[in-house]
Amino acid sequence: MDRFSRYFSTNRERFINEWREFLSFKSISTDPAFHEDCVACSDWVRRHLEGLGFSTRYLPSESKPVVLGERQGSAEKARVLFYGHYDVQPVDPLELWVSDPFKPELRDGRMYARGAQDNKGQVFSFLKALEALIALGVQLPNIKVLIEGEEESGSEALHAGLPGWGDDVQSDILMVADTGMVASGVPTITMGLRGIAHCEVSARGPKVDIHSGIYGGMVRNPLQALSTILASLYNDDGSVAVPGFYEGAQEPTARERDLANSAPIHVSDIEGLLGVPLAGGEKRFTPMERRGLRPTLEINGLGGGYQGKGGKTVIPSSAMAKLSMRLVAGQDPHRILSSVVEFLKSAAPPGIAVEVSDALVGGPALLLPVDSDVVKIAQKAIQRAFDRDPVYVWEGASVPIVSLLAKASGAAPILVGFGMQEDNIHSPNESFSLKQFEEGFMYSTAFFSVL
Ligand SMILES: [Zn+2]
Image 1 (cartoon, rainbow, N blue to C red):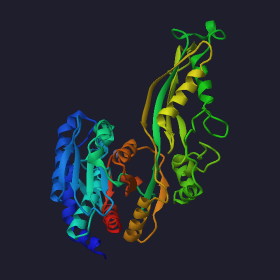
Image 2 (cartoon, rainbow, N blue to C red):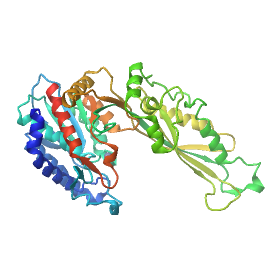
Image 3 (cartoon, rainbow, N blue to C red):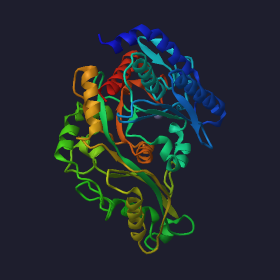
Image 4 (tube, rainbow, N blue to C red):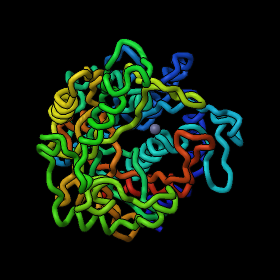
């Protein structure tokens, strides 16, 4: 047993009690009714960091408080900025919870509470690692800890503030612990996150819904026109047909493809879970490559005309669809979005007005180079803490704030988290096992030990 495991077992009960306090705050950021709880929770985080020897302050925010803790260390070492969030998702439906989401309960080695994993559990395992590192006299770098309170509701304060916070957040390495493992006990480095952009498209025809017998064959049907436009977005090989859609997209390297395909995630398991074959996307890539390493365009909603019971013989006056795209490294989300908007508008046939609204960019993609120093540090830390190699995954989802934070801080991001599917984040009975909590703790202590 190494000194960090020993520190963990000696202090386990106190860790659990402090973690319970953190979990008791109803820091639901999306609901204004819980604003004071968010403020109280941010204050708790500040006091906790101060207890560890950090100086703390709030960064200017018009919405939820953003906590910044700082501790000076060795100037010889790479500076570290840690990012996490103290806010949580709403708890409804409350009746599905076995215990009160804000009265943390330990059952069978798992802590049940809203935020138990996402992100309070993961943040707290990091804070306790800092405590152990300091207590055991490990020489640390300059460390900044940024804990925001709006990750679950759009990170408003960070979006507004980050462009001007360069000096406050400047660092060399950005540690993020808001991701998961592919399987229990399999430490995982998340090598990428996709960028995201959205828009809504409408096709308008006659002023009102009209009789399909009187006008059918004379007037162009907006639903038919929109369906044709949407179908023209894709090629037969599953690729996106919009000119410029792949502009800038970095072609995955052979090594990235190898690592992505060797993660212990089985296509048959996913197919079993979903009840469908993984038949979407570009045929020239495998499902794991298509998910994390390639851009995609999806139709998220489609509507128009009569949708009630029975038939109604109308030509609808309009039709609409919602689209979103997931983008990869090298792509400028604004450019790709405007290529899509241009394509949609120019596809309008005579008699139909195509309009695009709500065109929004969430943020660009993030990609960690396989051979980068920071990935090597994480790999070494994982080998030291778990005596095995990590697994590498390219996540298909988007966490826009990580890309923005990496840009503002100038730091190289490294994403290692210990979440699991069974933690039920955002759902009733969210939990985090003490095993995962300890894994997070061991990883962070090893990370600073090998830095
Ligand atoms: Zn979340």
